[in-house]
Length: 481
Ligand SMILES: Cc1cc2nc3c(=O)[nH]c(=O)nc-3n(C[C@H](O)[C@H](O)[C@H](O)COP(=O)(O)OP(=O)(O)OC[C@H]3O[C@@H](n4cnc5c(N)ncnc54)[C@H](O)[C@@H]3O)c2cc1C
Ligand SMILES: NC(=O)c1ccc[n+]([C@@H]2O[C@H](COP(=O)([O-])OP(=O)(O)OC[C@H]3O[C@@H](n4cnc5c(N)ncnc54)[C@H](O)[C@@H]3O)[C@@H](O)[C@H]2O)c1
Image 1: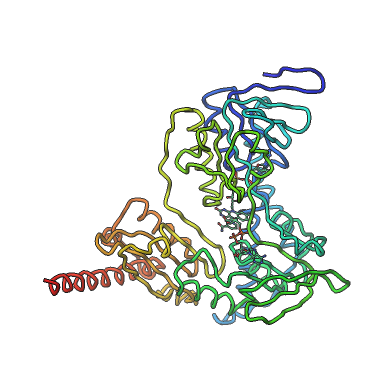
Image 2: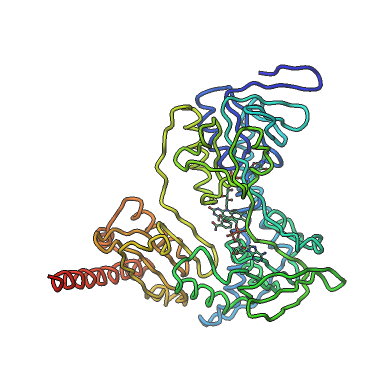
């Protein structure tokens, strides 16, 4: 495979995978079963974004925050509790669990990959099928999978306070919790981490831009989610950061709310959670013959992950299509199948979308959102999160909507805001995956008192509305004659 002189090496392989994250490893596991002619190129630490700086450390932090919150709210149950948060211990335990359980498992897998299949350094295209890795290795590959993930976006306005800026890449490495933090953004990272930090006793202010939690699309769901979170958290949902500066008091954020009011405050730290940018922009794609739009976007077929007619495939967060873990893994495998079968496409079916915010209450969107269903004849089953089980838990905040096809009774999608909504979301995902009707779901036994009773009741509500809708349309049809 190696060929070349002392200073420059050339490696010829059939397949190259750029990135050893979730999607790259998913692709590797498939291709390595078929051929030895492959290399996986990784820039930076192994261990994946999910395990090192993403899903796992964030959920470990949230769980510590849940315990702190239980202490603060247990009075209600006649169980007054005293206790306090030891920031250093919270973060030490987070890193210990993360490193020993999740990262170590991934590194164990990477260790077993033969050395000839691994190359370390940043890859960039220097021509079609030609990659430079660092300054001294050229990889020539017939088929290339770009599984290079994304990185946090940091706007220029934060440059004056960069020494106090944190992102999800750095926050879990803190020795201790800050006394105060500005959280910029109102997406999933901002809300999950902002609420966790608040519950752990950090004085937290969240600054949004659009005034909306974009994952939810029904206006009433959006409103309620914001109301519930704003009840607990200090949130300025819409406006813009005008400027930032640093002095002895900390990092100052000068924010103009959309009602014109200025809010200027100093913080120990600033967590910038304003979205992520794909690492595709650093690959020199123009040298590979890839078409790039004016906005820097690259078009990818979601059923093959193929990029135009080229032997190039893009998987995971590098595409802006559903940047979540299970999709990254699927996409890596779809890309691998299509690279292995190149030039014949092997289109794969995609799973219904599923997204969960691990906030309290949780937010979940399954299947088609309310917005995507505009123009389609649907009925909406809806209820507050007040099943007997939720009352017992004293967790009755939130609301649930399920969207049924008005003619066929098939469940098309749902938006949820409620305690541990993730479980109901998965039941709905199962029903949507199999094209089930509300009637079919209602055939299953549901225990009393369980959270699933809420699902039953919301489907009954949807069916009532569907019958009414049917009666009205028949009435209308009859009266039209
Ligand atoms: C804070 C946070 C919390 C999250 N929580 C959840 C969650 O709860 N549930 C969920 O489903 N998803 C969650 N996600 C999303 C999930 O982590 C990602 O969807 C998933 O990790 C993406 O995997 P990937 O393989 O596309 O990218 P990555 O795992 O990032 O892998 C890409 C790799 O490519 C490397 N690379 C980049 N450029 C080059 C180059 N030029 N040459 C060589 N290597 C390169 C990168 O260094 C990186 O190691 C979270 C993300 C974050 C940031
Ligand atoms: N539970 C999960 O599945 C989970 C958890 C964390 C992260 N993730 C993944 O990570 C990705 C990135 O998360 P994210 O929260 O950074 O991105 P996001 O796209 O979800 O949210 C970014 C938010 O920042 C706001 N924003 C942008 N610029 C701003 C500015 N200048 N000032 C104020 N607000 C601004 C946007 O309006 C948006 O609300 C997500 O798309 C998700 O796929 C998933």
